[in-house]
Length: 74
Image 1 (cartoon, rainbow, N blue to C red):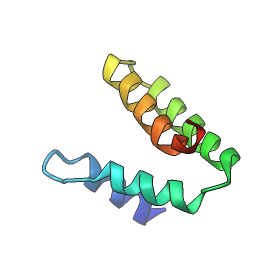
Image 2 (cartoon, rainbow, N blue to C red):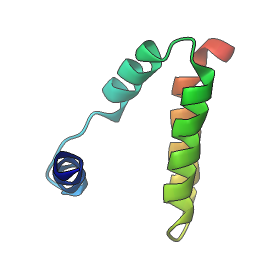
Image 3 (cartoon, rainbow, N blue to C red):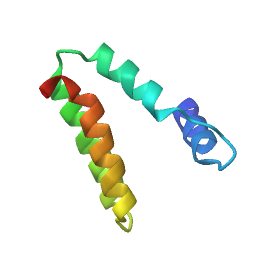
């Protein structure tokens, strides 16, 4: 739990460069045929977004994550 908290704090720092695309690609590959787990990830992301004031950027990021995780759908 401490590692997760430290990672989150490091990620949200403005000077920390986090490559979301790279991590999404790893997740997508690891969960290649596990659409249920991918849906759980989207559900968790949606809960995080809805816990705060929702902005247009939030919608765009959610759609981007969804598109990457379910790119095999198209």
